[in-house]
Image (cartoon, rainbow, N blue to C red):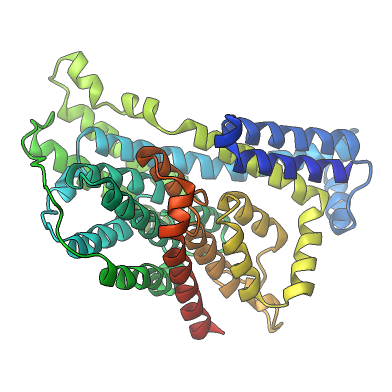
Length: 454
């Protein structure tokens, strides 16, 4: 049965990676394999893995009235996994809603209207740096969508726009890697306690920045000339007043940036901070538009934003994290961690491998699997275990590699898939024009981190 569950997980992986070819949304596949893995686990596993034998006996002693035995234990463990997963999903849903409210008020236009340069090199650097920092404050997927909307307004030439779109993918993933709210994987590690907001910002900012700067320097020698035409995007009448734009932007971004501070002060889960920020922004927008007609008011309401959030992505994360949880309870992840340690015996090599794999396989299950394979270690003198303490080099480097490694292929990250869909960029074009520079940046930032910490 264990082999059957692993094969089911692998088949699901293949279906997720090829969703565009088979025309089945990855959320549907993830939900199926997540529930199916737990079903097979409960029905087919008759003996607890040796690694969890002591934990199982402890649970039995605490629950003598439970007559379901192993099935009851797995039910208890499933509830534990759902609790952890729910924290991540509630955080994501809150953050997505805040971003949608800002976007409904054209809040991002306050930022993008400041970009007026016609020189390609200057424009490339401006958009890339803006994407890098905006991704850290929002998330890489949302930032990629916002920046593609921007370059569509100012770059009419398809080839140039595709090049800028490819760099947006690199910049968005690099920006998301050093922020606890910039990428789903860093959020998972932050909520899971593997990293702290201060630690990941301090130690990953420079490597992530290098992974972007190196490709930009190379492309600065290649990209020449000016944008041929620069259509005036300011002529359109804004549907909201400038004051309303700024209020939505300041409260939205401010709320997102306050979440790590809220967690450090209260020690409550991050989703509590994001829900507090959403509540404040929601009330403010209700007051701003309270006197407007219902039809006009509804366009800017949080209820409208809730209908627009990317629920398929939320359900994808739910399914894939459930599946990884089943593999963890079966002991498969412990076996995998032992194999990786015996094969590489180096946390940097393990993470660099994970980063390359994240270009092919979605980084969410890879990071989820790593979190299951390696528990957070206590402060220790053991030369191997010290890499796995909170803010240890394994967890920090995992956040960097899984985040920036996805840029190597356009299908390797949510930001890349979004840009691919919006601009119709082909896999082969990205592989030829962007992948070499993304790989160069990934290796440069990785080597920089290793030299600082090895």
